[in-house]
Length: 118
Length: 114
Image (tube, rainbow over all chains, first blue to last red):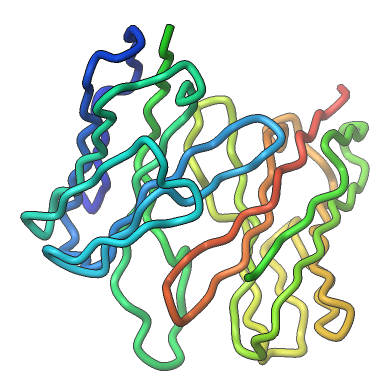
């Protein structure tokens, strides 16, 4: 089954304790991205990657790191989490659009990770 | 930069009635996609409907339809014959071909009144 898998689904941690949220896709997609969702703000892009070893900042990258050593994996790293990073996080992936196509959703989403930083 | 605005944080509708969720966006591009996503309590992001900017015809998917006004940069979602299962957060999103980025609105929480 084609899917984007995020782990963990829920995570409670304390300020300053490094954590990693994993994301893996089995669709051989080149593009992967992380979003955070906050009430009243919608989903905002944190980082994205167009391919292996190619990453770039999204709209809200401060306090986050990513890596793309393999095509299927795109972990999100919080080296020193703070309470303002308490949020719902989504990983997503896609293949590049090439010309006009019949797209359902341009992005395949994971099921989200609810992070609480105390 | 593209922006997407949903001006209705919350909406409610009686079961079996029709409701319209509004969305406006700002872009200088002429070629793009627009989407409505549904997010139920399970948190899953579910695509409801999509619209290609170069198509004048409004998209329709069963009980869901859009009113796409390209010149006004407006993209509203109409849900007909509302059902209890339609209760969710609805996000409007703009897709940019160049960087494959989805830009989301802030969402509208839809409540269905039995």
